Structures are given as structure tokens and as C-alpha cells.
Image 1 (tube, protein in one colour):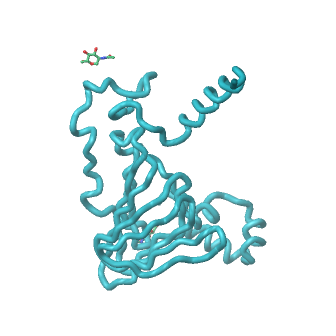
Image 2: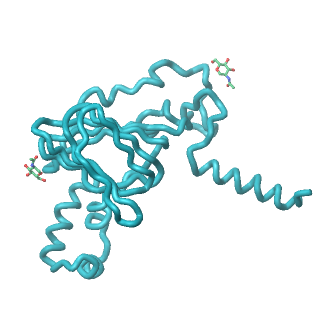
Image 3: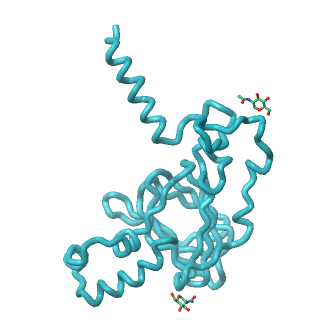
Length: 211
Ligand SMILES: *[C@@H]1O[C@H](CO)[C@@H](O)[C@H](O)[C@H]1NC(C)=O
Ligand SMILES: *[C@@H]1O[C@H](CO)[C@@H](O)[C@H](O)[C@H]1NC(C)=O
């Protein structure tokens, strides 16, 4: 016999858990309503709600990095809402780099559409798993682990990543460390940098923090 308080606790606690994670859908779909009810009346849904055209073409390269990415998450593609998935298109100029970063809420599977990309991740023991992958090959980046890519081919490259979250989140290590406003003394000590070296890194990564 389960005590009543425990049942109540489980109901309340489970409710708060599902609210903060990618839920199992209880409707066919749930277009955000923009009002107090979570989903728009489904009879108002149109096919356009389920089509996203924003990755037909590459994005603009971030200044200096030879890299662009377009996230296809529930913020820009409401049709994904509650479905627990999303995507990204990333384009690389020759030599372009996708700086070390991680997605706190999703595992990513990425397929190379064009080009040859040095691609890898680091696990929680600081072991590296990296190699050059090429057109048609797929690599998985386990949830929350730091990963990175560099176009080592002689032509531009394109990859498509897919995520098991409608909103995977993105933390770029250089911007998080040098572009977020952490106290300078701390960064100098943590990385063994002179004030001049730190100033250079802060300047460089402030402009990348919106990427
Ligand atoms: C949804 O929209 C349809 C068509 O406009 C309407 O008949 C129906 O009553 C609406 N349902 C709800 C729950 O508002
Ligand atoms: C990068 O941005 C700076 C100003 O922030 C600009 O002067 C420079 O031309 C840009 N370089 C490229 C390659 O777009």
C-alpha cells in the first residue's frame, strides 16, 4: 500500500519534470498558441506550419571564422513544438571552423553533405575521439560533450545535424569563457595569460558570442 503523501508528491514532482523536459506528446502536434492555452486550436493548423524553408541556402559566415550555422529549433519552427527533435545546417568555407561547443539538452547526429571535415568530441575523461569524415558519413556527438569541426578539404563543406530535443541549447566554449564577462584576474590565473593576451582573446570572442 503506497502512502497517499507519496502519491501526491510523485504527481506534483512528475508534473514539474515533464514541464522542463522534452515531453512525450499527448496530441498529434501542438503549435504554440501565444495565449494562455499551450496549443493552438488544431483545426487552424496549415501545412505551412510544418514546413521550414530557412535552410535551403547557407547562412552568412561569421566574421573571420569561415563558418555559419542555422538552427532549426522550436523557436524558429513552431511545428517542432513538443515533438522532441530539431536540426541545424552548418556551412564551412575552406579552413572554416566550428569552435568547441556543446549542447546541454541533446545528442547530435551529423551527416556530411559536402566536403571533408575533421570532426570530434571529448568525453568526461578528456579522451578525444576525432577523425576526418567525408560526404555521406555520419558522426554522433553524445549529449553534453564538447565537440568541434574543421573543414580540412579543398572545397566548402556542409553538414546537417539532428538533435533529440526541440531546443538543444548551444554553448560555445570560447564565447562562454572569454565573451561572458568573467573577472579578468580569474581568467588570467585559470589560463596562465598575461593581461595583453587576455585582452586579445576577449576582443576576439566578444564578436563571436552571438553565433
Ligand atoms: C477550433 O476551431 C474550430 C473551427 O474554427 C471551432 O469549430 C472549434 O470550436 C474550435 N475548438 C476550440 C476548442 O476552440
Ligand atoms: C570583420 O568585422 C570588422 C568590423 O567588426 C570589419 O572591419 C571587417 O571587414 C570584417 N571582416 C570580414 C572578413 O568580414
